[in-house]
Length: 452
Image (cartoon, rainbow, N blue to C red):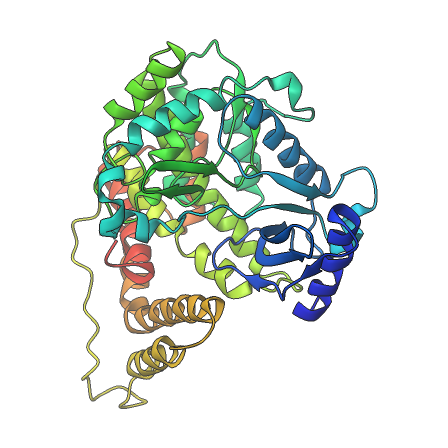
């Protein structure tokens, strides 16, 4: 659907909902969000003035109308429980054909002032004062979410989150030893929980709208479900959502303030060990989600293939985080350095790495002055070119090391090692196995993101 077609469809629907005199500006697609499209536009009404709205829409061809309806119902109950969320203007239903109005399942909501981009929230001076108070406030906000009435949100599903994740993992392709070790650890160290609440499912830096005063809105309820409320606290503390900050709670501050805010709001003190278990689960979950997104990117019909495929290589970051959380460390062998000045290569200079580097710089700087979505995608493309360049330079040496480490542990392939770890016939307590696992993870990270 072109921008002009979407604008016309929005105007038709807005006139049905808000009045025949309304007009709609050309929608602008916002950056980020690999699973859904997000657009902003302005509604003008001669009698009431202008109003900025947000459209959240499933990519056409990949709709989940029941999930969108569940998200809309969660907004209503969240407001009742005192959780800040945008006001809903309209949404498609999972039981009729309203999704046809905009091409796929959707939510229409007010656009609130504030910032959601983590890099700005963590680095801009204007948010310096509020960063110190955010962990406490986020604890209180989570306690309110966990006070929502599960019966007021029909369709919430629950169940064993580890087994749900395992099923999803098995559908995403080749098995990985680090992930197998993490699944086994989670199953052997399950925390006890007597609580069953609404769980936001994606409460993290990047899905929170903030300003200098604090939390303006909790966004992106598409993964809402029911279960152990500590899942949300663990997910917020996953290293991925710190965006380079050393502070564990979304990059903003310490767990003690998060726990204190939670207890002050609801009278229940979080168990740190339970939250740690859910943090490890969340790290594993993000790894599986990265694999899932990459698989989506390989399917014809996706219009954000570049971003989806780039996310697939972020599994390497999760592997390192899981090894650290499990106390297994990382590989000590130094990563080889590419020798771009070598003269005995069959193809000579410039090398493949040098060619990719110059194209990368062209892409990065050639988007200056373009619209925000194009600038964002150019940055993603530049990162992808960096990955390709490092793989071209280091791939042969890293693959040789990988084969040697596997054979030293008694395996001919990484999937065979993963199968043995799953079956319990191999263990990371074996130094040769641990070396093979760490070596593979280090190799992937050296190519995907050596600065991580």
